[in-house]
Image (cartoon, rainbow, N blue to C red; front, side, top):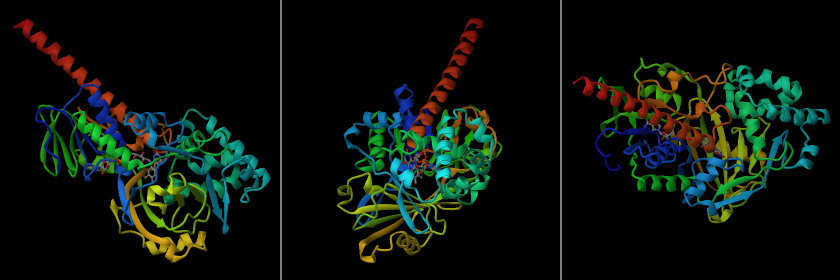
Length: 458
Ligand SMILES: Cc1cc2nc3c(=O)[nH]c(=O)nc-3n(C[C@H](O)[C@H](O)[C@H](O)COP(=O)(O)OP(=O)(O)OC[C@H]3O[C@@H](n4cnc5c(N)ncnc54)[C@H](O)[C@@H]3O)c2cc1C
């Protein structure tokens, strides 16, 4: 466990993922020390942390950067890692009806076998119309399926979009608002020059775990007290305005706290009667199980294979060593097989039998032989994707963002203009830090006014 933080009133950030690290960085840059960052795991990073497979280090989950991710690119540059970024046009593929086909450029779009000519025109036109929508209130108010049918028609929605949506939201897909799929289309296009153009992916040598490690080092150098291996269990607002955190290492006292945890975890920490606590506790989330497979040889030329065959035990095939040079994995090849599902737990191992996943992989790649599979590891995370039902475009009222005086919440559920991504998490963390500082400045100015009044009356 890391050393205890500096004594005295201070700001706490709970959760050391990208959002928490960005918030702590901003607080320190604005001179708000001391800042203490609490993380239950042994290192910072959250979904961007590291893992191990076949004796090699790898990322817990696959990550790429898009050319439009300005905050992420600036963060990478600011941490001195710009030379580790490699750009790739590995493209994507689709698997359905026993066929694996490319979907990486205009020619592939024209040859795409799963749609008729008129459906292809409808798909391209619908994507352009979806991308032109700037205001999220329309998609947020509609159910996904109804919104997709309106833009793409019944056939394209049934053949393409609903399988893709179910691959991300599983059984929760019918309950979700269309904001998620609208935001996903926008992000998809931000990596391309048109609906049928090839994407550009940026990947980091050393992985996003290297990025998280560099950010952790800089936070320590800038004076943050980083308490890893320290889960926060409860939060209580004291009569004197301070906030008491019950942590695994004992109680700690702060004058402002930012929770960057998924909704249900934030809801568990807050007092049950705190405004907003019920909203956070009751928010529906999907977990994720992702098998990480280390192979002797590449499977395909694609970074992502989208699956239209819903009988497979995973919902995508992501071949990381098509965007990162295989020497990153000692010449081996790394593939992730994710499945979003309710009720996954936070752990490595457990969950779905990896043999079942490998059988599924052999359905797509029948020539894959057992001796070519070096290792398989399952990574699991309990809350990775919030499922927001149709409603207002911002379903989080002020009391959910600031449930108590001095207590703030910022988590990926609040990212509604794009699917959760590092760029948006950086913006979210920084914006939350600025709200904390604004409230603190307001409180200090009120205190100064009050002490000025009492001095003049005395
Ligand atoms: C499979 C997958 C692929 C992705 N691919 C991409 C991609 O290609 N590009 C991209 O930009 N983004 C990608 N993302 C999204 C990106 O990882 C997230 O947007 C970002 O990591 C969210 O960071 P966060 O800090 O909000 O959440 P988290 O990373 O979940 O951080 C929350 C932290 O809080 C800690 N915590 C929880 N409870 C407690 C407690 N009680 N006390 C103390 N600490 C606690 C957790 O351990 C965790 O470290 C991907 C995500 C997933 C799941």
